[in-house]
Length: 588
Image (cartoon, rainbow, N blue to C red; front, side, top):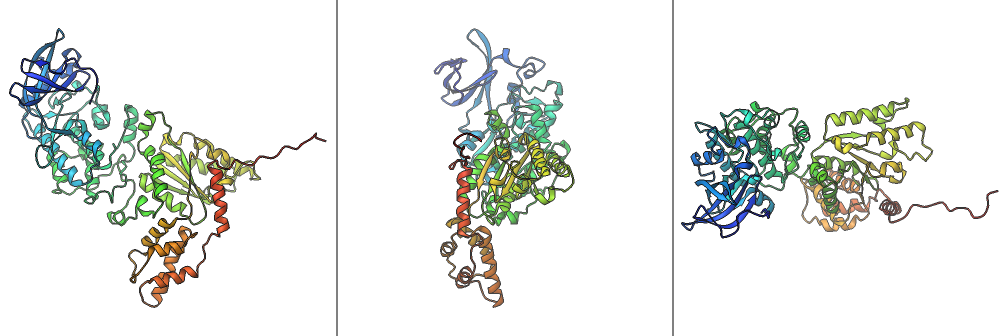
């Protein structure tokens, strides 16, 4: 609710019969109140200051279009007109519009209160919106709403199920009006179709575009684009449309939902839904939707529904590591998905992160799943693919990698064994290696703004050039330790899943027997047990697994793991770097 001071106070009477009960909100040219009529019923009353209205808000006869549209628009999915007129407030003429009260909340309030958890709820709400638009677009003089957003979708909660009603016709225009009358001042452009922004043209397809954006927001809890800057917003729409991981959160989800969104927000109006009826048919499963790829729209990863539902996609494919995944979500993923929000608060985007830890703890695997979770393109680079014995060739390879990553942004570049590519320049590294470090430092300048995120992985973080680990480069550093008890238990469950198992597998006991084993060891143990069972054509038993564990030592000795604990403390600043002691006395 907007707490800005209203011009009419509580209990004031408007037009002799509407008593003000509650001030709801204040816009740039109108205020909205909850009022009680002389008949004892509740209503919404909107009070307009004509002097503040844009000229395009009026028809040729000087009538306010919002009022004229609502007078003739009568549909169960539209807010209902009661009456309108003129009233003098503070010595100035104002227009008022009375609308029937809708007991409920806006879609924006609904999403802020509770996450939408089923596609069924999305279909139910948007079906009402589309039926309302189908009516508006089918009138003899079609009406384009021009501002379909979660704030302008009211959910009537008086019945057994929420019924969506379209409200606020302040930006509505007749389809037959000249496009020169299009006014986008004050609109949230993230919901506005590109042709409305660039050419000022509005159509039924532009309303359907807005519904597609609302559908995306209902599904993922965020907008597909987020910028108050028109130029940046249009640039974002030239990049691939990203679909964050959703499988597992909605039990009735399938890929057809993504195809519907992609078609609804297509940059080409000819490839969008051509009518609200067509959109509605697709939403209700009455019409199959083919993939509609374009340069600005594609799925982040070509992953089948079966892979996702099996938990083999994104973070769902990583057993355990709950705290690390939560930390990455907060520190990195949210920033990459909502760059404009971070920019608004003056928080810089991370350019990259370093994953370090003992061998076999899944750094490469983790990086790939991280890329899937974020929805970025993924580039795997190794020192062998970038380094060259020829002068300047390594620098050229690095520059080419970044150039191609920017062309296909958003992109995650994963550099394995990054210490081999970027050794400490104060060491005895070859001059060509030092040049590679310099080139990498130059290329990493402001990569976040270019849609590039760098992930480096190493077993030896203390051997990397310190400049790479400073702010603005590999900003975030995450230690991937050997899996703890719960992670080991989850790994055994994951690796043994779908294999022929005997009764009596005790996953807690397996986890207890494998303390100090790294992730790669757990997979090896399961594979070895499976091979033994295959030889005898029997099921994998607890006894077989215990035999394999007893006969297989951890691949990383305990004393090595203890070294990594010390490295971690150094990286986190718990152990200050050693300083050379200055000699006492005079130099000879």
